Length: 171
Image 1 (cartoon, rainbow, N blue to C red):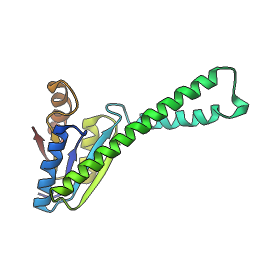
Image 2: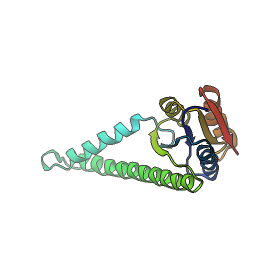
Image 3: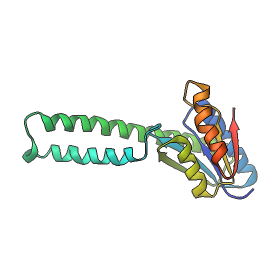
Image 4: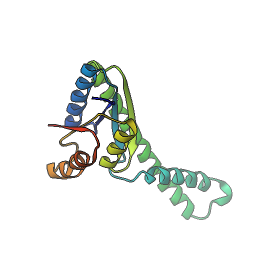
């Protein structure tokens, strides 16, 4: 097999099992391991640009010369809350990737990279697999979603049918 192994994880136990499986393949075959986590769970990547725009709006609204009675203060407060949520999502994603890296290292994987993405789960995994010229994609059969069919039907099946490499779905 040529190319690195791409593994997607959402921090759930099935995602952890996918990391374990991918790390074992990586260690055994001497291939690079690319661990992917998709941020903002289902929001399009433009959401990051929107959050950056809101941050700029909050800065402008806090300038004394543009303060009008009430309106801009409310917008600034709302924007600050959204920024805090965005920062929390990124921090959680960073922690998920750090834990996945540690898990993979413990199983013997040596060459590990991590990537955080924002957007549709399956599309992002497919994009990373293509960009990395992956030889294999590994993902859990079910992540944080409660309904088995929802995740298996959307993410795993989409990756399985559209990836141009081997796909391993871990139970």
